[in-house]
Image 1 (cartoon, rainbow, N blue to C red):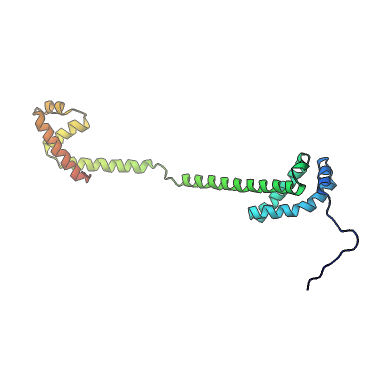
Image 2: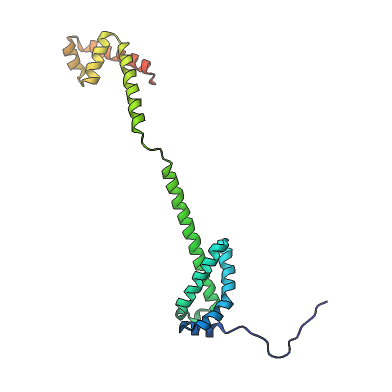
Amino acid sequence: MNTVVHLSGPQRRGPDLRELLTKVAFGDQEAFGRLYDVVAGPVLGLVRRVLRDPAQSEEVTQEVMLEVWRTAARYQPERGEVMAWVMTLAHRRAVDRVRSAQAAADRDRRAAAQAHVPAYDEVAEQVENRLEREQVRRCLKMLTELQRESVTLAYYRGCSYRETAEMLGVPLGTVKTRMRDGLIRLRDCLGVGS
C-alpha cells in the first residue's frame, strides 16, 4: 500500500548556494561554514569513488573546500550551478591525485629496476682476465715451437706475416701455414667455436 504524505505549511528548502558562494567570495566565514555543510558530503563521496582510499579522500576533500574558499570569486553563474562547479573542482583534484600517485609509482618502479642492475665488478673482471691469460699461455705451450714463434710475433708483437717470415728466416707461405695450424690448435684448446 502506497501512502502519500502531504506536508502542510511551507516546505523546507536548502540554502541558496549562489547566495552563500557570493558571500564566501567576500570572505564571509559563516557563509562558508553553511556552504561547507551542504557540499562537503557530496564532495567526499565523489572523491572517494575516484581515489578509493579513505584517508586520501578526506585530504583531497579538504583541499577542494580550501580551493572553494580561495576561488569563490571566480565562480560564473552563467556556466552552471554552484554544486556542479564544486563537484567539477573535486573531480579534477581527485583525478590529479590519481595521476600524481601513478607517476610516483612509475618513478619508483623505474628506480627499483635501475637499482637491480648489477654493478660493475672490477675484481671479478680482473680474476676472469687472469684466468683467460693463463689458459692462453697453457694452450700456447701445446703448439710446436715454430707455431708458437709465429703466433707470438704476429699477435703479441704486432708483426705482419711478411715481417714474421723475415725475422724467422723462413718463406712467407711457411709462416702462413704455421699460423693457420697454430690458430686452429689454439681455438680447439680454448674451446672457442669455429
